[in-house]
Length: 405
Image (cartoon, rainbow, N blue to C red; front, side, top):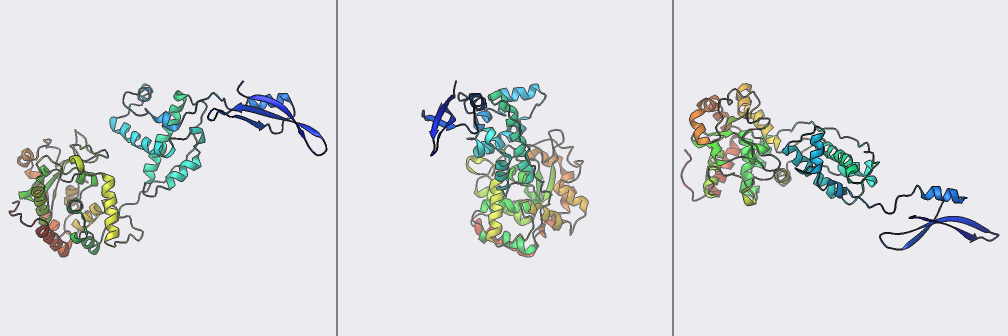
């Protein structure tokens, strides 16, 4: 018996009364503790009460113990999922592992029974920068923990009904000409690399993952063109196809660029000894820049140059939206859609080689199809920004000579 029942006489002013108590040894301190049994009038009621108390021999199972091997390839957890018809891809397992790390950081030292919907909801609502979709993915991963709990000795737990979050479907807003000039004022940037990657996003109409994946081989300098043929996933892995593409349908496209941006990329690659297969924008270890890092840089730069959001959704993707809006001033929708990859892939499905030197001879149709966009690209950010970029090119790379053409 882990709990002992005893009856003690308690003297009051007028008489002595009996009260029922239970005692036990605290497993953490080794100290004997004694507590009164409320509203107890008989030994039978006392034993009925202690029978409802938790087993003192029960070992605490913390959330981090349950999550330890979840979503790890080859683990019992993944094998069980597979046996139940849930064959998760490696990318999906990685996504769940990433969310699991966040969950363990927040609640790892708690038992599942102590994690209430209010605790989880308060935590997620405190993450103001996270989208509703991300928070719902967090809750989805949480639900897997409750399904795994019985295999770790946690029986009888019922998953709480967590409140889902509305998805933030508001599209990114665009920047004005004056805001673009302020944002790309090179005198206000601390890091030329960060300035240039955002300039590439704005100049080529790139997605953030496409800009992170840029390699020197993608630039056809004598055509003022860039072949967008890959995408960097969240974990930094580069695909050889673009967003929503696949190995069978790569979704490649060609974008033309302002002369000044191409010159900057060329000079930057010479200055930093970048080779054809190298990523252009890297952190330590020659790995692509992290998505979160670029999002933070964008946010800081907005504040630094004094661009107010005023209820607008201004994110790195705003530069792509701005590109599309401004190119449409001079070009038909069909041509703009080709440069940003919004249409079907008729123009690119014929070409499957990854090496740009080999592709150059095979893709004249792709380059010619968007060649007429070059003039619009040079007018993309109006005259003032063009001069700023040109001056930046001369100042930053002084001493370098030659032209990519």
